[in-house]
Length: 282
Image (tube, rainbow, N blue to C red; front, side, top):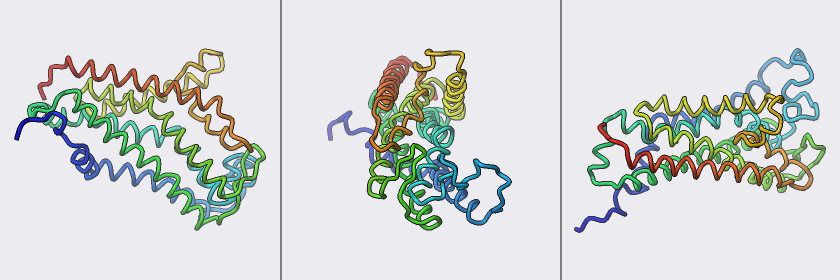
């Protein structure tokens, strides 16, 4: 049989290989654990009002206060809790560990000796890491909805913006939110993937990406930076709030998605160029 570069490192083989890894299972377990822990804490934890007006499910007109109004509100609140760190960590793990782990195991050079073209290896790795990230993004709202349904019922979505949305509309809005958060995390995915190409230490790639994103979030919170903040890739991380109004406001989400896609493309291009020149010895 003649050699065909397009058939090396098949997607399904790499996907199956990565899904079997313990870090993948642990990452999904953390995503599923968030709604379980929060719902359990509300249902079985202390019911006093010592937490003040911002207590989860207190009824105040914000995401936290409305969290227990029904499955839709609970799911929205889980996105609010997961966006600042949990989803960033999961996406960084899948995309930052993918190439660096092969280097740390000293298997990267054997993959290239298969021979797998370098660009194809990166593309296949990236496709799989993005697939794993997408699965996590889908798991969160599905698990949150069913757990919220069991714990808090199926009341219409009460948004902090004063809108009341039927469950059929709420599901559509959750689809928009899931899609937007997934796209906004492409910046994190691209950054983690690029660092993964430059290092042989998986934790360094994962931790480096998380650290950069946290630093950018801190800078975004400094009002003294003024209009500079709108150019930060993380500035529009919570623009999905605009999907909670009576009619969706697309402006900020379009800008945020555009910035994320552009930075992702740049990081992947840099990664391909860097890896093409890299002396792979491990």
